[in-house]
Length: 140
Image 1 (cartoon, rainbow, N blue to C red):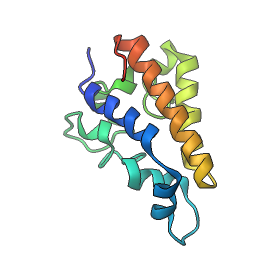
Image 2: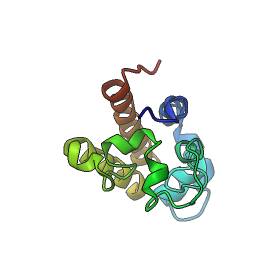
Image 3: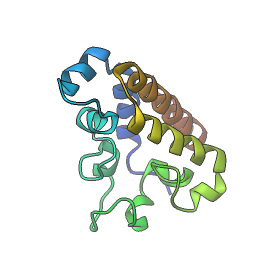
């Protein structure tokens, strides 16, 4: 089955690659640095209600982490889900699933703007790879 969020995945690659340290600092403000919250605000990362990829997949049950039926329409499904731990894809593609898990955690665990930029770039690189190997799509 072809995912229903290919265009959104391409947009997300471009967004991950275009985020700047200044943007991150602006979102972080004076509060304690929290990579996951900042990523969420900048890209919808980690929240199925606002994630660009999740929003593109028709759902009737709003729980992206347990509702496999909806996740089947997502680009990440074939490779183990957005965090690399779910679905049959993790068994089919264990190395990619592990990379998904690591890049997800690196965004969540970033301690400063540069770490978050690096994590975004790695996630973008992986997303480019998934689009290429899974669906033959190059992101410009």
